[in-house]
Length: 250
Image (tube, rainbow, N blue to C red; front, side, top):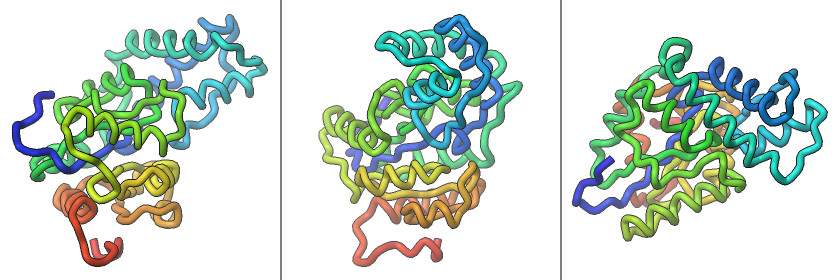
């Protein structure tokens, strides 16, 4: 992605799974292959993502399948997961789906003055790129500025890592005043609240609108199908305001 010369002063961080795309069938198959490659045993149970990073899911999946994690398990699993997912890239668009309105929302937000879009996702970087590329969404994302699942940090810390990367690259300080997270899980909302960002909850995943609000989302949308409402929310949460934004008014 090539950034424009205009000053970038708004950072938009998208969650990937169940916010922009749903490729859960392919993801589970890749996990099963990676698990077998690392442990020599078949995968019996994969813990639900629930907005967690791949690094956390891997450790919990090993535990529930009776494997005691050792130092080399995580790097080995991440390597095998990337390879297994890449081998299945041709299935992503066939067996997965783009979430309603995702492409139009990304395109519309890309036109907002001063915006750069990246991802804050539990997915490892190589797989996040493949997921979005399969549906033609990658052209709106600057992947070098994001936070990813192979980085062993809580999601709130990953948010701050992404802000720091953006500041180093673009020369603009990114804080709660000009950073917004868009995601479908309560984990996304909690990360935004703790890490220092506005939060647009999208009730397209496993979290209900009421749960997203309770977790700290500033604005909650049913999905991304109304691109104008997504843009309105982004602008409201990345512009100076005299009073808090009322999510019921957007």
